[in-house]
Image 1 (cartoon, rainbow, N blue to C red):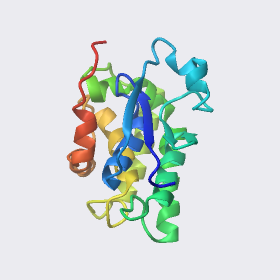
Image 2: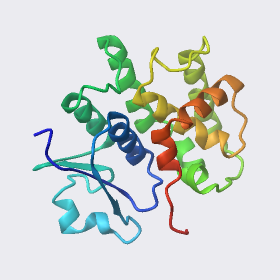
Image 3: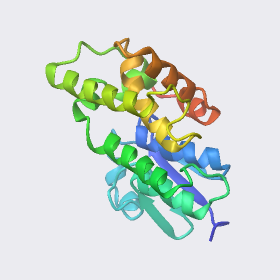
Length: 210
């Protein structure tokens, strides 16, 4: 089944952090795949054709032969299990669990940060107004956690690069690229992650005008 054709469905503006995460994993693993853009603005994700592939009618969705899967962390874990030669998760059981913890947290918490600093800041260079009080609390929570994880100035979260590094860097870059104050250690960390060729490929996609 590993030699079956793969397709990755992403948003047409290339602004979904979750689509980016799945894209980066495919690139890091050197897997051949077809990239297909879905226009969320026109509701293309709600058509019957797309709904037949994506249970959640969201992006990203991965199709591998006759198998389809949505939700980014499920996709990246599936790719790790199916194509293990180039790992994107740590090998240790506890470190892998910590990686999943970070991914789940960044996707389920910090909603105020995502609302106040959308990925249009990251990928379109938009500037957002000052944070509201609720978002400031969420930002401090993000910074506290990131500083704890990276307290010794390490280059990666778990000794070697993992997909959680990209997920965390993107969340930090919502602030950094808007000009918000972020501790230098975290800014340097995010910049290092951002320079990976797989990340830069996504960053440099030609995007439609807003």
